[in-house]
Image (cartoon, rainbow, N blue to C red):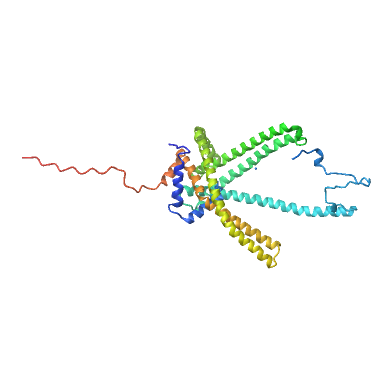
Length: 384
């Protein structure tokens, strides 16, 4: 029978304890830290007038009628058309390479984002397998779930595009309307409208964030198991999930509410532990960094391209180490929350329930069958 969100807590705690500390295995803990990190489980003056948008144009005091752009650097304006043409050509020659670099950086950022989303999608299925079987095998999981990860990747990209469009609508339409009505040009004349409009804007923004959060949680908790066990698409998984949600609205709402409470508690506890551990590491590491800087300055080293690059690389390595350390500390949460969703969902999804039942350990205690009855005494032979 389906269990409530509260009833699923104790089995999830027992599952986490059995997987992580009975017995404790450093290799599995480290692999779970990596999977949890990559899968993303380790889970914002005065008024203005129309003249404010124009360059100030005071006339030259000599009365010659020449206009000086006082707010621009004066060295850009030299006497003679030749100097002005040279300045414009210099600005144009520097602008084109800068634009090319900016475009290349944006494209590189988009490619990196797509790669990370794909890795996160596959790692989500590896984490699912790791929690169900209580064994984490990254290579085998990657080979097994590459196709599932690609389907989830496509869903996440579509969700990102849809959410971006929704944010543009939520942000753009109210701002464009306020601008068209002149609320920003003369804000003091529209204080009430700005306050009410701002409150409505914040409400819509919060509802949009809440909707996206619910979709994300329901996808990774309830759609991913269906994709892994039946090779369904994300859309088909959501269609089947929605039919279950409609029949048990209160149960799923209770699950989301309980998960928020548990996530807040776990976040506070793990945040305190992580802060203390990182603080204990930062003090000696920072001391070594200060000594290195002082030694380099004494040796005559200066900040140039090589030393800046070295400092950036060292900083990135330190950041990665700190992130992995935080993920290592958060491994219990990375196991507990998927286990919590599985124990809640297994009675409502028969394929997952059957798989979870197969992973239960065989009974090792005495048999529960009643003891065998003692033999009856022999029947005495009849007399005579």
